[in-house]
Image (cartoon, rainbow, N blue to C red; front, side):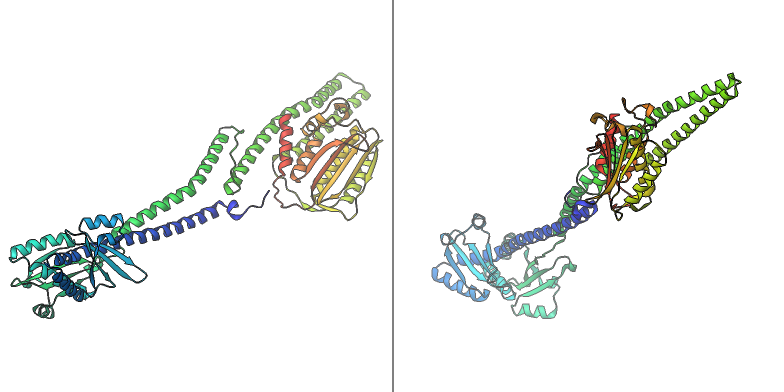
Length: 560
């Protein structure tokens, strides 16, 4: 399996990293959005404010009757404004469709050149195909004063007060802010400002709007007795108005919510699938398997759930099989004991009674052996046993098995091929001894004359090999022999002894050893050969069983 990265293994790291990425992306998007909107807003603000001013200037040009007067008027306007006004043909300027539409609607076009920090302004002169243009580097008090003078010049063409007020009302629509005549007494001006007005100087009034929106107003003298021209209030451009910030915050919250939903939804869906599997198992459906996706925590939880349900199902099936087998195995010795008891009751012969007592003792001993085997198998089957891991010397273990087997006095030759005295492997000595003992005992029952035992270490794996010269095991039966209480026909019959639990116990011990247990034909003795291979160094004390061994054992039980 390829090496998994942290992002593949940890679902929480992926969520945290995803949230961070979503927040950074949304913040970057918000910055671009605000910047784009502000650029559009400031452009619209420039053109809206400039439209009224350049409409006045355009009207001043239109009011001149001769080209000479027009030139003279433009020169005066240029001196007042601080920038030179020019008149160009509309066909000489490359204009965009949007700019053409604005010029046709008597609105001003403003182009900003960031390289030189200048504004290039175009305004179409009414009734002509000429454009009034000027370059402005900055807008300040000089331009505001010029606006007041242009307004006074325009009002000079309207003699009565009613006409002037009507004209100011019309210009207010062009300027997009109010322009009106007001009595001096109604204006909140200080003495210095009043003095400046009496000197025919315009006054600029700034108001911060309580920190919400700043604006200015321009008060200029008029030719109407006792009245002043009030221009404004003119709102100053606000880069971050409340409605813009509120809109951006709402959009960002929506995007973050969508991003979080995109991160959480797959996790929630997989957890729901896992919950559905749990519900099915709670109803008794142990065949339920949860789909495993990826290699993260949820995937490992799903794998654990599948392994757990499979283990529970296997335990239940094994329990049923064990119950049926135990009940069958117990009938024979119990029946013999009952028969012997009846014989004791029916005979007075001392020798006959002693013989029946001996038969009863043998059957009771057989029952004890069977119970011991059943308890051992059940202990290995019910869950992970407590294994006392230590480094076991393989040579010493095989020598011990050879001595114990020879002590039985059976007419079978035990041939022991000892490994190097220094070869050691990590194992539980008691259970490893049981494995070799069971394999040798099984070989002794079916061997003709010879049993060979060997062991060693190859490529980081320790192994124990037991061979006999019996009739061997047919290939189709090699998986069945590990099933509890299973016995084969022909040479391996009930008359050979045993209860059919020895190899099942070996299989379970191999399972907890992370071992691979195999059976085939002995190349030298031509009988059966059993080999158990396990790692010489266990990765952990709490062992996750080898998947291949797990699948093989489950397959064996299912086929039985």
